[in-house]
Length: 240
Image 1 (tube, rainbow, N blue to C red):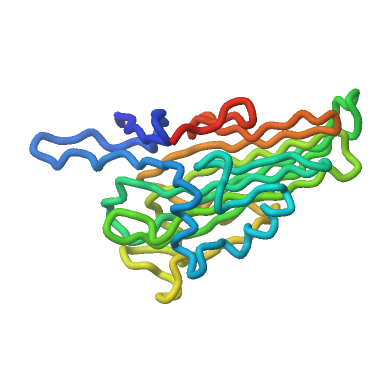
Image 2: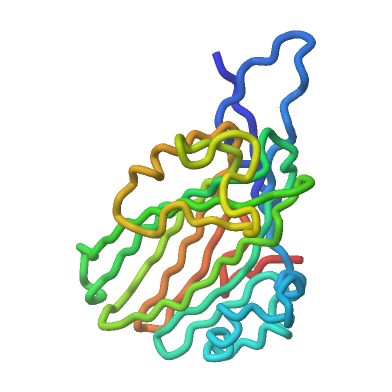
Protein backbone atom coordinates (compact mmCIF):
# COMPACT_ATOMS: atom_id res chain seq x y z
CA UNK A 1 0.00 0.00 0.00
CA UNK A 2 1.17 3.56 -0.65
CA UNK A 3 0.92 6.45 1.74
CA UNK A 4 -0.20 9.88 0.55
CA UNK A 5 2.33 12.64 0.86
CA UNK A 6 1.25 16.24 1.08
CA UNK A 7 2.19 19.38 -0.84
CA UNK A 8 1.59 23.01 -0.07
CA UNK A 9 0.41 25.92 -2.18
CA UNK A 10 0.47 29.10 -0.16
CA UNK A 11 -0.71 28.04 3.29
CA UNK A 12 -3.07 25.33 2.11
CA UNK A 13 -2.31 21.62 1.90
CA UNK A 14 -2.68 19.78 -1.38
CA UNK A 15 -2.32 16.10 -2.17
CA UNK A 16 0.92 15.01 -3.78
CA UNK A 17 1.71 11.91 -5.72
CA UNK A 18 1.96 8.88 -3.43
CA UNK A 19 5.21 8.03 -1.64
CA UNK A 20 6.19 4.45 -0.91
CA UNK A 21 5.87 3.23 2.66
CA UNK A 22 9.07 3.95 4.55
CA UNK A 23 10.99 0.99 5.87
CA UNK A 24 12.62 1.08 9.26
CA UNK A 25 15.86 3.03 9.09
CA UNK A 26 15.06 4.69 5.73
CA UNK A 27 15.49 8.43 5.31
CA UNK A 28 12.38 10.53 6.02
CA UNK A 29 10.46 11.91 3.00
CA UNK A 30 11.57 15.24 1.57
CA UNK A 31 9.78 18.43 2.57
CA UNK A 32 6.57 19.00 0.57
CA UNK A 33 6.87 21.39 -2.34
CA UNK A 34 5.46 24.85 -1.64
CA UNK A 35 4.24 27.32 -4.26
CA UNK A 36 4.11 30.91 -3.02
CA UNK A 37 3.35 34.32 -4.46
CA UNK A 38 6.28 36.70 -4.85
CA UNK A 39 5.94 40.47 -4.35
CA UNK A 40 5.69 42.01 -7.82
CA UNK A 41 8.36 44.61 -7.13
CA UNK A 42 10.72 41.92 -5.83
CA UNK A 43 10.20 39.84 -8.98
CA UNK A 44 10.86 42.88 -11.19
CA UNK A 45 14.25 43.48 -9.57
CA UNK A 46 15.55 40.42 -11.39
CA UNK A 47 15.13 42.18 -14.75
CA UNK A 48 18.05 44.39 -15.90
CA UNK A 49 16.08 47.66 -15.94
CA UNK A 50 13.62 46.75 -13.19
CA UNK A 51 10.75 46.22 -15.61
CA UNK A 52 9.32 43.10 -17.21
CA UNK A 53 9.17 43.94 -20.94
CA UNK A 54 6.48 41.37 -21.71
CA UNK A 55 4.07 42.84 -19.15
CA UNK A 56 4.94 46.47 -18.41
CA UNK A 57 3.23 48.15 -21.40
CA UNK A 58 0.20 45.87 -21.25
CA UNK A 59 -0.25 46.69 -17.56
CA UNK A 60 -0.15 50.41 -18.34
CA UNK A 61 -2.93 50.00 -20.89
CA UNK A 62 -4.92 48.24 -18.17
CA UNK A 63 -4.40 51.25 -15.89
CA UNK A 64 -1.79 49.65 -13.63
CA UNK A 65 1.64 51.00 -12.74
CA UNK A 66 3.69 47.95 -11.77
CA UNK A 67 6.25 50.13 -10.01
CA UNK A 68 3.48 50.91 -7.50
CA UNK A 69 0.96 48.05 -7.75
CA UNK A 70 -2.25 48.55 -5.71
CA UNK A 71 -1.68 45.10 -4.20
CA UNK A 72 1.91 43.91 -3.73
CA UNK A 73 1.23 40.34 -4.91
CA UNK A 74 -1.46 40.53 -7.62
CA UNK A 75 -2.23 43.21 -10.21
CA UNK A 76 -5.49 42.94 -12.14
CA UNK A 77 -8.21 45.08 -13.73
CA UNK A 78 -11.21 44.90 -16.04
CA UNK A 79 -11.61 47.80 -18.48
CA UNK A 80 -13.44 48.10 -21.80
CA UNK A 81 -14.39 44.42 -21.76
CA UNK A 82 -10.75 43.35 -21.35
CA UNK A 83 -9.40 41.55 -18.29
CA UNK A 84 -5.74 41.85 -17.32
CA UNK A 85 -3.81 40.15 -14.54
CA UNK A 86 -0.21 39.47 -13.56
CA UNK A 87 1.48 37.77 -10.63
CA UNK A 88 4.73 35.93 -9.99
CA UNK A 89 5.43 32.79 -8.00
CA UNK A 90 8.27 30.49 -7.07
CA UNK A 91 8.53 27.03 -5.55
CA UNK A 92 10.22 26.23 -2.23
CA UNK A 93 11.58 23.06 -0.59
CA UNK A 94 13.33 22.07 -3.80
CA UNK A 95 15.98 19.78 -2.33
CA UNK A 96 15.48 16.85 -4.64
CA UNK A 97 16.83 14.38 -7.19
CA UNK A 98 17.30 16.76 -10.13
CA UNK A 99 18.30 20.31 -11.07
CA UNK A 100 15.02 21.21 -12.77
CA UNK A 101 11.26 21.09 -12.39
CA UNK A 102 8.66 20.15 -14.98
CA UNK A 103 5.36 22.00 -15.13
CA UNK A 104 2.35 20.90 -17.12
CA UNK A 105 -0.79 22.98 -17.64
CA UNK A 106 -4.24 22.09 -18.85
CA UNK A 107 -6.07 25.17 -20.14
CA UNK A 108 -9.82 25.13 -20.75
CA UNK A 109 -11.65 28.10 -22.29
CA UNK A 110 -15.42 28.48 -22.32
CA UNK A 111 -17.35 31.25 -24.12
CA UNK A 112 -21.05 32.10 -23.91
CA UNK A 113 -22.81 34.01 -26.72
CA UNK A 114 -25.58 35.41 -24.50
CA UNK A 115 -26.84 35.43 -20.93
CA UNK A 116 -29.27 32.65 -21.91
CA UNK A 117 -26.66 30.49 -23.60
CA UNK A 118 -26.53 27.05 -21.93
CA UNK A 119 -24.05 25.47 -24.35
CA UNK A 120 -20.82 27.46 -24.28
CA UNK A 121 -18.11 27.00 -26.88
CA UNK A 122 -15.18 25.11 -25.35
CA UNK A 123 -11.52 24.77 -26.19
CA UNK A 124 -8.83 22.70 -24.45
CA UNK A 125 -5.06 23.12 -24.78
CA UNK A 126 -1.97 21.71 -23.07
CA UNK A 127 1.45 23.16 -22.23
CA UNK A 128 4.59 21.48 -20.85
CA UNK A 129 7.64 23.46 -19.69
CA UNK A 130 10.76 23.12 -17.58
CA UNK A 131 12.39 25.42 -15.00
CA UNK A 132 15.96 25.31 -13.83
CA UNK A 133 16.59 25.28 -10.08
CA UNK A 134 19.68 25.87 -8.00
CA UNK A 135 20.34 25.52 -4.26
CA UNK A 136 16.74 24.62 -3.49
CA UNK A 137 15.08 27.50 -5.35
CA UNK A 138 13.98 28.38 -8.87
CA UNK A 139 16.43 30.40 -10.93
CA UNK A 140 14.21 33.46 -11.28
CA UNK A 141 10.44 33.21 -10.95
CA UNK A 142 7.39 32.05 -12.90
CA UNK A 143 5.33 34.86 -14.39
CA UNK A 144 1.58 34.44 -14.88
CA UNK A 145 -0.16 37.11 -16.94
CA UNK A 146 -2.85 37.54 -19.56
CA UNK A 147 -4.95 40.16 -21.30
CA UNK A 148 -8.22 38.54 -22.37
CA UNK A 149 -10.79 40.34 -24.51
CA UNK A 150 -14.50 39.58 -24.50
CA UNK A 151 -14.87 39.93 -28.28
CA UNK A 152 -18.40 39.21 -29.45
CA UNK A 153 -19.17 36.97 -26.47
CA UNK A 154 -21.35 37.73 -23.47
CA UNK A 155 -19.14 35.85 -21.02
CA UNK A 156 -15.79 34.06 -21.00
CA UNK A 157 -14.05 31.74 -18.55
CA UNK A 158 -10.43 30.56 -18.66
CA UNK A 159 -9.38 27.76 -16.33
CA UNK A 160 -5.74 26.69 -15.93
CA UNK A 161 -4.82 23.57 -13.98
CA UNK A 162 -1.14 23.47 -12.99
CA UNK A 163 1.07 20.65 -11.79
CA UNK A 164 4.74 21.32 -11.06
CA UNK A 165 7.45 19.21 -9.51
CA UNK A 166 10.26 16.73 -9.97
CA UNK A 167 9.59 14.46 -12.88
CA UNK A 168 10.86 12.79 -16.02
CA UNK A 169 9.86 12.84 -19.65
CA UNK A 170 11.25 9.98 -21.73
CA UNK A 171 13.88 11.03 -24.31
CA UNK A 172 13.35 14.71 -23.41
CA UNK A 173 14.06 15.37 -19.73
CA UNK A 174 15.76 12.57 -17.83
CA UNK A 175 18.40 12.30 -15.14
CA UNK A 176 19.68 14.83 -12.62
CA UNK A 177 21.23 17.59 -14.76
CA UNK A 178 19.41 20.37 -16.60
CA UNK A 179 18.87 18.76 -20.03
CA UNK A 180 18.43 21.91 -22.12
CA UNK A 181 20.48 24.97 -23.15
CA UNK A 182 22.91 25.60 -20.28
CA UNK A 183 22.64 29.36 -20.76
CA UNK A 184 18.90 29.40 -20.14
CA UNK A 185 16.79 28.88 -17.03
CA UNK A 186 13.56 28.03 -18.87
CA UNK A 187 12.60 25.69 -21.68
CA UNK A 188 9.23 25.24 -23.36
CA UNK A 189 8.87 21.54 -24.08
CA UNK A 190 5.45 21.85 -25.73
CA UNK A 191 3.70 25.07 -26.69
CA UNK A 192 -0.03 25.38 -25.99
CA UNK A 193 -1.89 23.08 -28.35
CA UNK A 194 -4.79 20.59 -28.46
CA UNK A 195 -2.63 17.45 -28.36
CA UNK A 196 -2.05 16.04 -24.90
CA UNK A 197 0.48 13.30 -25.67
CA UNK A 198 3.45 15.05 -24.05
CA UNK A 199 1.28 16.25 -21.16
CA UNK A 200 0.27 12.67 -20.36
CA UNK A 201 3.82 11.32 -20.66
CA UNK A 202 5.21 13.38 -17.76
CA UNK A 203 5.97 11.07 -14.81
CA UNK A 204 6.11 13.01 -11.54
CA UNK A 205 7.85 11.64 -8.47
CA UNK A 206 7.00 14.66 -6.31
CA UNK A 207 4.66 17.45 -7.35
CA UNK A 208 2.01 19.94 -6.29
CA UNK A 209 -1.17 21.10 -8.05
CA UNK A 210 -3.06 24.39 -8.14
CA UNK A 211 -5.75 26.01 -10.29
CA UNK A 212 -6.38 29.52 -11.62
CA UNK A 213 -9.85 30.52 -12.88
CA UNK A 214 -10.63 33.80 -14.68
CA UNK A 215 -14.19 34.88 -15.53
CA UNK A 216 -15.60 38.10 -17.00
CA UNK A 217 -18.77 39.22 -18.80
CA UNK A 218 -20.46 42.07 -20.64
CA UNK A 219 -22.32 43.18 -17.50
CA UNK A 220 -19.04 44.16 -15.86
CA UNK A 221 -18.69 41.17 -13.56
CA UNK A 222 -15.21 39.66 -13.32
CA UNK A 223 -13.02 37.54 -11.08
CA UNK A 224 -9.47 36.17 -10.89
CA UNK A 225 -9.50 33.25 -8.48
CA UNK A 226 -7.01 30.82 -7.01
CA UNK A 227 -8.17 29.09 -3.84
CA UNK A 228 -4.76 27.55 -3.19
CA UNK A 229 -2.96 30.90 -3.32
CA UNK A 230 -5.66 32.63 -1.31
CA UNK A 231 -7.22 35.19 -3.67
CA UNK A 232 -10.55 35.84 -5.37
CA UNK A 233 -10.06 39.26 -6.93
CA UNK A 234 -11.45 41.86 -6.80
CA UNK A 235 -13.44 40.72 -3.76
CA UNK A 236 -10.50 39.14 -1.92
CA UNK A 237 -6.93 40.13 -2.68
CA UNK A 238 -3.91 38.13 -1.48
CA UNK A 239 -2.24 39.16 1.76
CA UNK A 240 1.51 39.77 1.93
